[in-house]
Length: 102
Image (tube, rainbow, N blue to C red; front, side):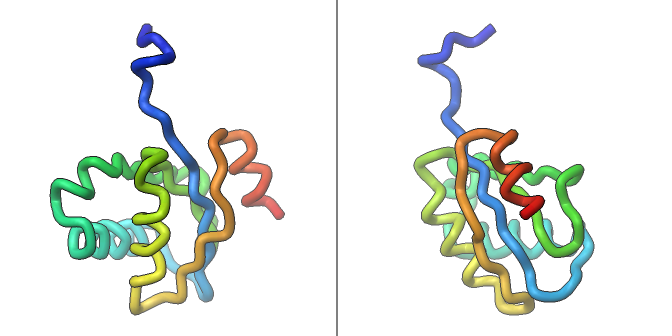
């Protein structure tokens, strides 16, 4: 087991989309915009992980490193095809699930 000091700090960003979009399309759009804005190195450093089991067509949760939260929020705002807005950011998945249900 990894010691807590060495563990990667993460944040969960809850976002919403006006309209309904399937998971694969949204994932592709966010990755494409991330590579355009941050480049390959920045996208790798961000450590973006989508949580497909928590996608409902209009809202989703993305896990990202704690130092890259602001950059990912900018990336979400740059997506042109859909109006994507970050709702909230939290440090625990339990709280993120609770906020997504509201």
